[in-house]
Image (cartoon, rainbow, N blue to C red; front, top):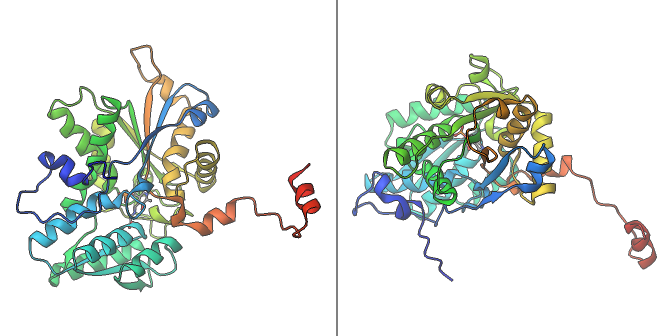
Length: 360
Ligand code: F0G
């Protein structure tokens, strides 16, 4: 059954730089669920109303599809034949997918041995030319910048402004569902494009009179890859959340602007805190995300323990609302899930043994 949803460009074209001439390349991305997390809210004190924006349910399993439908559609409109990106995995999966749909060539540079298995599988299956660079994400992005400046290949990292235009639609969807802006917007920060895009989206919706207030933007980096928090480039970033293992974010300044203009903050969470939130989301809410996505929830848990949310003036008699962006699906990184979860119990194929193993 067709529910009428035609993707983010069709839904929000009045807010996007497209015209009737733009050839829309879409897999009906967006319109992802906003799920109220009652069990999680209860487990961490019951003083917050937490909502989960489950971006893992986009066509390639991450929020990147919102930006990629725009970037690829505009590249096609401009007559480009090939696109290129550096990636910690999700951008490459999305670029490869949308380029395939648009019949364009796609080249991706990934840090060798440092992207999750599901993302590599997707990128290869969609037919991109994949180069594993013997360096980290920041090295790969520098190479892509140089190459796309010299050769006729369109850059589709979030330095491409159309990417952020597409990604800002996540903010529109949240406001449309809640009937206004949340009080807080929690989000993982890697290359810092998404926090920039969401802030732009909220501001534009307010400008258009669709919402009356703006959220405080609260971003979270992994502790071993927290250049914005530390105020310096991290030469050798480290974290199990490979999607956000970035030491020199491209949208660093814009992320700081989102933080400061909104009265929010950018903090860091340890790998242990990320894993804890990752497990809680799966076991309490039935929402399976990749580790980087759990950074937003890990950050909320950390700040709540510090009393951050109660210190702020909340004028009416309701709980503060927080939307956590869950950026990518748990199946992207099966290795991590297997590592942290309880393993299956091996039993003989005998009724008595199975029943005994169940505990009866
Ligand atoms: N969460 C996931 C699952 C990601 O893949 C990324 C970024 C982020 C969060 C951070 O978003 O970069 O806009 O601050 N992934 C990029 C990639 C870098 O190549 O897939 P950001």
